[in-house]
Length: 73
Image (cartoon, rainbow, N blue to C red; front, side, top):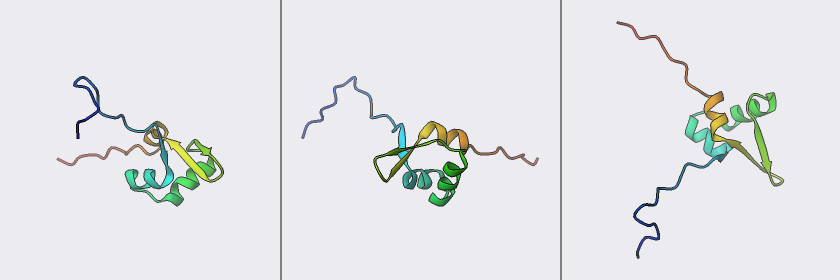
């Protein structure tokens, strides 16, 4: 089966929105931690329909950024 992408086409971009479950897996935190951050107002989220909650990847990266550690020499 031939690919529908032309020679100059780029690969698909990362999603702008992510479910709490997928975000928890990617950032190695629990879904409950993300829900607490949303409830506290620390992590902006949007409801997509009645039950689906999505967060922006950029907001996750901003809120859950790693803390640099000091290196011992």
